[in-house]
Image (cartoon, rainbow, N blue to C red; front, side):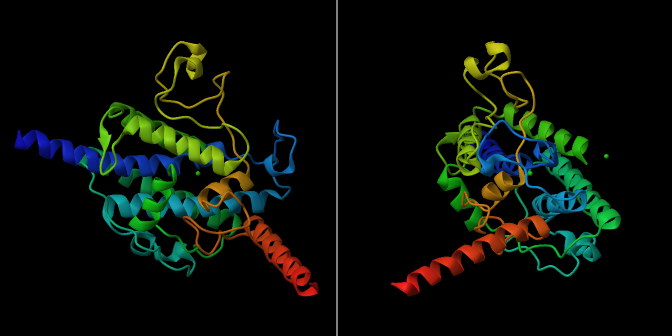
Length: 288
């Protein structure tokens, strides 16, 4: 009985870590709209206009985030140890810790971490980069995101990582996640709900178990690969992604994993809009 309890606890700890990793993998490049239009008529759901360099460099923010999450989860140390030159002088992540993973999962996540290092290097080498933004990977930040629901060549690898993580999560779909009274499947549904709420452009992702009405051809409740009603992959714009990783629902208000905001021309454009809005509000307030 004691052995059974210990095994269950171990599963609970590393499935919690996997749920967190899933949340990040949802933000991968495979779901980033680079230049196409969307079906949403409102401007907030349209891709931003930018040159190719700025668009790819925008993804560097997410690559830094995934690199630090994967490396620290598997090894307890990040880019400053593996390849400090790639940080370009950016500050170390806040609160990053090694996760309690079983040997199989740890080796998979470690591999993902090294892949992300390669992605960071590829972008910086080919297009130039910017200092690693301030990242908050603390337990407290994850807890805030989780309690709110909750809780980003390159594209092929990102999509493959997502599939592996969702498969691992599906294997443990009906186990409870410590310390919450929710199963892994419940948690992925809550994560998807929150991301849709923050993204503000409709339902664009789903958990690993869904009603048959949302399953492939309305015939299955398993949902290892999340896709729309035509079984096509979902896509998110740059502003949607910022709303989610900031955890504010607003691409101009930093927070969440990027407490000081993301870097690069696209992210700075949104931050500048927020500064201008604040200045306008201050001017209006001083008139009265």
